[in-house]
Length: 575
Image (cartoon, rainbow, N blue to C red; front, side, top):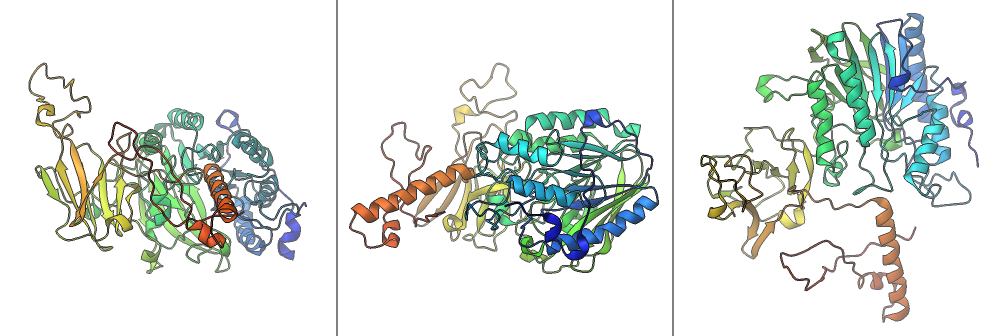
């Protein structure tokens, strides 16, 4: 079944698709004739072919903006932040009532038709759902090739010169089936990272270049706090979230290269009415230490369709720029396309800029959506400082959902307690990384940090020849060489929180979607077997008798003695 996009829009929204070819850095040869520009930034579209009215409405809000800009000789462009199709069955394939729409050929062709209808060139970056055509494609490579072909792209990344020495640059996710952990992690491959690093090196700020970056998820270190808890605990909040080195690379490039002026992202489906949805390179000293975000403003982008919003807002971003600076605006699709200036950024020089919020928070209930506390050094919740010796009691009372505390281990790792959970935070940016201990294991208990190393393993850094051969895990300083244990305890016992093999603490629990689908099919087979061969009277009773076992290691024993598993309630998915 081939759905015609034009017929799915409102009658007034018929269109003729515009040219839609993206450019790569190597092919950016045409010089922009103006130093003024207007860019529409569209968040997660999640197109559902049964629910197209909001897309026609959203498009109609941008057309007059582009008409005015073009009449004034300004550069215009559209950038989509990915997640183009709905991750549900949308009655789009009469041969399958279970196929997801996201990632299919039909999805990408419909998205290309929509994005090409703004009468302006468009570019797109891949999100975590754009390679989800599981029934149609066997591999990520096949799915990626169809995505690229549909949008006239040669590579997952793009570079377009929208105005004189002003580049729009994007990078897209290239993994879904082959993801090491959750398939919903936005993974930029190493080839794109190398390409991006070369681009910012060869377009320096002191030569007048300005680079605006677009990715589906934000980078670690952006400081954005319009997050939801589920993205943090599942390890899919930041770009390349589970790869520590790559995850930190993006903010390192931002800090080093002052040509990077702004970075737009989507992913969270939350609105733009909160100041936490935009962060500036510098902040008021009263708010905390210098965040070290280079010369870059980070902006979260909402969604266009009502059914995809997590807070009821339907908004897109509008970027308006000149040689002197730029504005980040909201286009409100629930208010007839009203344009509101959210922040004004003025260039002080090629390497510095100053930003000003244009309004206070317009959504005072935003704490209902912002779920993750982000610590700052020396804030009120900082405990277990370097002055503590041998034993640090995290809190005097058992942990509750109101407890907020965090601490830095001698190895440099940062952990904290918030919302009844223990989380790990990035040691450089203090951005939340992932779940260490869930509320069911932590609430009502206390936490202690104790020294656990042998005295003979304490390296004397002042004495020549003490190379610490017997203590190979020792750090570069006396404090970092100190081994510590995190203990969670109550009157019934003590739980030791062991680090992962790579030294991190947050639990990479969620595997990729293909692995989980296979596991669910195996459990469904076990239920069918139980109903046929065991004395059970129903599927529900059978589910209560099924449990699964997983690796890797579960004890400190050097001998494999037991693979006992906890008997948890089984959830079996039949589709």
